[in-house]
Each structure stands twice: as C-alpha cells, then as structure tokens.
Length: 114
Image (tube, rainbow, N blue to C red; front, side, top):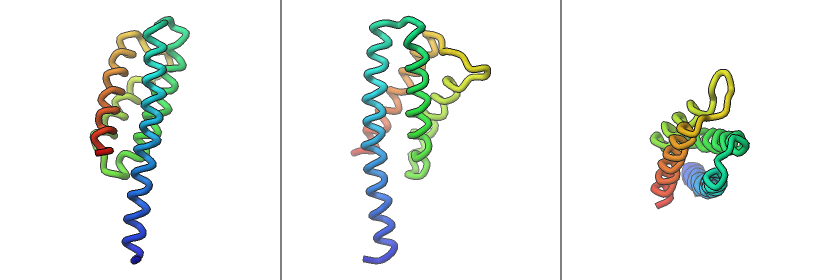
C-alpha cells in the first residue's frame, strides 16, 4: 500500500469517526432540548447553551477539514448566538433559533453519512 493510499484510508477512517462522534453530540442535544421544552425555566438555559457551544465548536473544528462548508457555516451561526459579549443566557427566541440551526446541522451530518 502506497503512502497516498494509507493517507486516504486514514482520512476516511477519521471522517467516519467524526460523523459517529457528531451523532453522539446531536443525540445529547436532542435530549437537552427535550428537557428544556419540558421545563423551559431559566435554570436549564445555561446548561443547554453550554452544550450547544461545546458541540458546535467541536464539529466546526473538523467540518472544514472534510470540506463540509455548509456544516462550518451553520456551526459559525450557532457560535455567534451563544458566544455573546458580555456573556449572558440566551433568550427563549434565541433558543428557538438555535434549535432550528441544530436541526439543520443534524440534517447536514446525516447527509454526509450517506
């Protein structure tokens, strides 16, 4: 096996692991959004917002490596909402917008897995 073949194989294995890990992150966010909608008090917003930030940041970090430009853009949009100056909890309207963006991200991840 040539060096180029090994590199290509390694990149494909990394891409598969990235998508598997991203699915775990999306499952976590589905659960957190479900919990938030059951009790949308301010108490749950900070944890949800933190998880959204952490997962979107991690996915964005590898999205461009695999040429997932739309994924990178959606993650960037998510991060612009959760990384506010000065730091504050998101409003309910912002949480709704984040939920739509996370749903779009999940769709893009499923498309990449096909």
